[in-house]
Image (cartoon, rainbow, N blue to C red):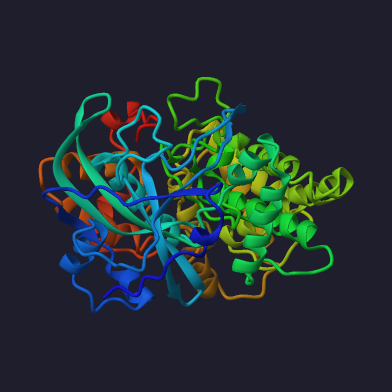
Length: 474
């Protein structure tokens, strides 16, 4: 039996959630299951059919108190009064090495927050979320992950008729910035306090009951958000929909929709074709992270003074900048911090932008510049001049070249999830061929290895994929 516990969130009042069961499929089947995550959770003794029966609701766990959560949020800068789990259910919690972890179903049917939706997810979107969760985890970026994709023969209508599917998702929490905004804007300060107290009590690894507990609570969220977004920027990840209802209080990346890993380095890159103003462009993500933290601070104004909010928010930029600078130094194989490092990093980014270089491959191939090989991306005159500065900077480092090469290959991935790769796996899966999906999972979970048999996945996207558009329904 799955060691699934009732979630403590269910003990909060009905103001916070709606208790309900979910709608399984009549003819469900396993598309894929996450063996690595099963091992980490200590449930590798459970077969895929057992998990399928539990997540589809065929096999009941009587002690569970499944629920859909209510929240609101700022979507593209505009406050939306009520959102909530329109197609998701929080099933319960499980123990893990890092504490209790949420088990959540996405695509589980209608809830009171579905509005005009059908409460279902589609195979296309759950494959994209599954793949990105595994890719981000392998890149050491905090993220939700999925245990299983459940397929069906049920059809739903999006832009076209598509196959319905469910995703069994894990995350450290599903409480988001918008959870606090809902109660603040509904003039319920007592529930803002109750939710903050719940978080401080339930997540002691992150928050503590100090005399300034609420200020410290907010400070930790700001720190973790700044750190998470620095990691996004370092690997070229664009979330696409950084609404406050998609921001975790524990700084985990979740609610994947129209995301994208930037290929040619373009700071103005926008992965969401619905984002006509470019609000969530790659270069804007650091600022939007701060904007969202400020929105959360406002929602906590019944607990934290405006002066304290401002002081805490001022820490965001320093944390973001210092974290990103450290990540970039590692990508360049530098251990020590020198005054010229910022100019060296910016110089490389400027070259990558002007010459439209592939972000991932350029960093991966920098090791060649240390061994005096020709770096394929950096062969212009200005790039060659930069390489000289790069090599000179490395003379200040004590490590041997061999150790530098190893350390650089451990932080600069060879493989990222390019949109065309996900699309090919989706196209095959929609034709009941899951082999491409399984291959892609192998590649994405070993992004720093050479994987000689999978070299094609390190190439830039083919020409046909340049115009792929990813929408919020993804």
